Amino acid sequence: MNIAFLGLGNMGVAMATNLLKAGHQLTVYNRTASKADPLKELGATVAATPAEAVKDAGIIFSMVTDDAALQELCTGPDGLLQALPQGAVHASCSTVAPDTNRRLAEAHTRQGAHLVATPVFGKPDAAAAAKLWLIMAGDDEAKQKLRPVLEVLGQGTAQDFGTDPGAANLVKLCGNFMLGAAIEAMAEAFTLAQKSGLDRQQVYEFFTGTLFNLPIYQSYGKLVAERHYQPIGAAPAIIRKDLRLVLDEARTYTVPMPFANIIFDNLSTTVAKKEDVDWAGFAERVAENAGL
Image (cartoon, rainbow, N blue to C red; front, side):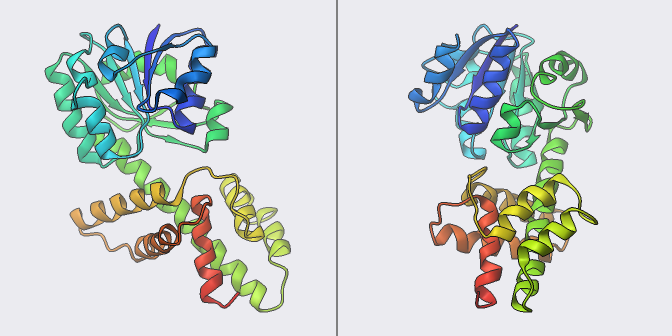
């Protein structure tokens, strides 16, 4: 299948590489063109603009930083909407506001194409190993066209959240909030244990081997227990943006979310301190406030 992939950060490169390995014809675009070099060596065609990238594609993937970048990719000068083939399906994988994908889905429909919101869960190493968890929402026929390609990227079957493209993005925001809440909880628990004289590493090993024997607690818990937030899966500024979107949706639907505000504030401090760490590094704010 002819596929276009737009947005070649760590996640995008990993996902695009798996599409190439599966035998698909791939055209790629990135604002910083040099990021496409590893994919070019694997056989990808590099396009100079989004419109050029998608003109012959049946399926288009996008993975960019935020709403503004996605909007620019679709509707800016040489944006993909002006060159979409009839019947093409755009898998919008970025973490954006639900209304952003709703508006863009309407614009795709006017062009005779479809946008399917397709957010993913997983770090770049999970993307490289084709172990992402995928969710999707949008036109039913477009989702069926997309499903076989998604099998190359993730584990299990992509969970379908209906025809409203915004629904998948709301699920993604809920998931990122839950991850942040787990990190905050571990940071507070491990800090209490340490200040009381316990070994926070031992506490982490006990809980992740018993009550919380789950990948999320094991992976992020290790960073929090060791207070070493490398390698960087996602930068604090990116997830701070996600928590801002969570709070925007909470205000829209009149849902008090005090934990979301705490996580957002801790991420804001981490961004302000310009720390070069994984986003879970906001857990250090708990240790600092406790005098550690």
